[in-house]
Image 1 (cartoon, rainbow, N blue to C red):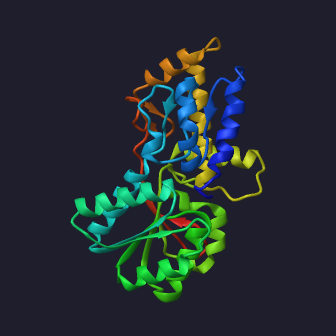
Image 2 (cartoon, helix red, strand yellow):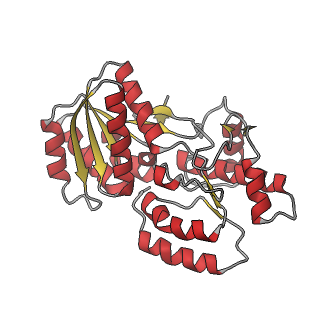
Image 3 (tube, helix red, strand yellow):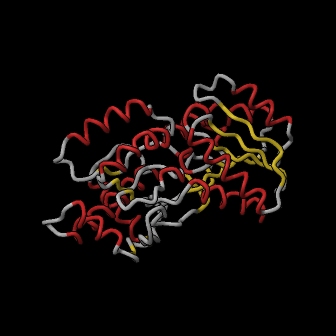
Amino acid sequence: MDDGYDAGKAVANIDTLLADRSIFLLSTCFGTPAIEAMLPKVLSSGIPFFAPYTGATSARAKARNVINVRASYPEEAEQVVRHLSTIGLKRVAIAWQNNAFGKEVEGGAARAIQKHGLTQVASVSVEGDSSNVAEAVAKLVAAEPQAVVLGLAGKPALDTVKGLRAQRRGLSLYGLSVLGAATTLKAMGADGVGVTISQVVPSPVSQSVPLSRDFQRDWKAARIAEEPSYVAMEGYLNARLLAEMLRRAGPAATRQTFLDTVWGTRQLDLGGFPVGFSEPGRSASTLVELTMIGRDGRFLR
């Protein structure tokens, strides 16, 4: 998964979609740069924009038609840094992707480091094509951090992790939820073992969360060849939540009555995943939990 999806393509697509008045809403649109590019048109159109797949605060517009579910990137970064302070790691570096997503993470992590009294020893950007990854890794290593927060996704994340592992094998690495795509994990191989990643939805393999058990049942029934993943779990969760909002809005729902239904839902337990739509600009969920990549490539809690 890469949070650098082509923003220009997204704008072209949104123009086509908004021209079709039969489209009731947009759901689970993906990627910070693309969503930021789409938002002005979404806001002016008034079309419901349900559960955009980004944690960027820029996507948390204070508008009734923009409905965020997942916790924000700053909330993820806050949880990571709070954990570092709890386990006594004081010297922290930030590696961030040179796009809207990376800048968002860098800002959130920097604020959290200051808040928790840690020391930021470096802040290093990585280009989306990884063209400067060797230089970035050298700067990170030279700063002698005890941990690195990775505001990276896709190829920059993969190359940075491999570079850091080659030079400082035991360095503690912490990524955000977008780092946990199955393709990235597979490509990291042994270099990914021990990397800690924050998650904003329940584990797709949990036996203790009813929603996760439902996901596993439906995943098996669909005969999907791929292994269950957090990305798939988030899509499933968003779909379940959207279906419930549409059910509550009724068969004669309009865009306006759908939005009224959403913002009237202050508390809802979606099978062990509590949500609440309190006000525009805020996420419905605050869940952030840390997982670690194990030797078999699976997440450990």
